[in-house]
Amino acid sequence: MERSPSQGVTQLLVAWTHGEQAALDQLVPLVHAELQRLAHRHMARERPGHTLQTTGLVNEVYLRLVDVKQVRWQDRVHFFAVSSQLMRRILVDFARSRRYLKRGGGAQKVTFDEALIPSPKRGQDLVLLDDALNALERVDARKSRVVELRFFGGLSVEETAEVLKVSQETILRDWKLAKAWLTREMSKAETNSPVADGSDE
Image (cartoon, rainbow, N blue to C red; front, side, top):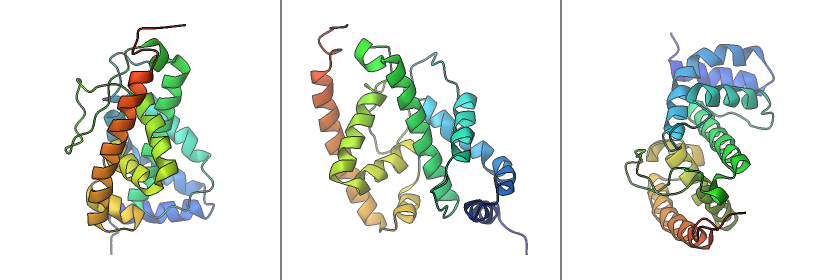
């Protein structure tokens, strides 16, 4: 019986987990298009003219995936969730290195909506969101992961529940509470930011 693309990805991930490096070479063409879509989703929240482009972000993820040793891959959903987390980390590191937050470098604002559709009018900013997410993780790690998977990874409620091994009702409840918590924290942080009063070093 012929394997579905999803089954093929899962089997290659399992083989990679068990040290078969050749499995990664076979995996790349199966996941490349979806990684491109995921990268485009991330880049849509960045300011126009961002130095890092979609293809560059995907390439950087591939480089980091090669170094990922501790992950025991479960399936394709898990793979794309981890890939999304890597993309977020790459973009946040990039933003911090350019000090966009401190100097008001035009980073796009980040807000939440149920549809999770990127908009050019989203309010500020990736670094603020990252700081708030890290703070939320210390308070409630699962809610932080829900935001990571849904907002950044674009996973559905069903897929997020599958990754976190909880009910869809739990995901919906966590999502609602996490959005309110993060919005409040980001608002406080923005008010206290040097950018808010126009100061600079």
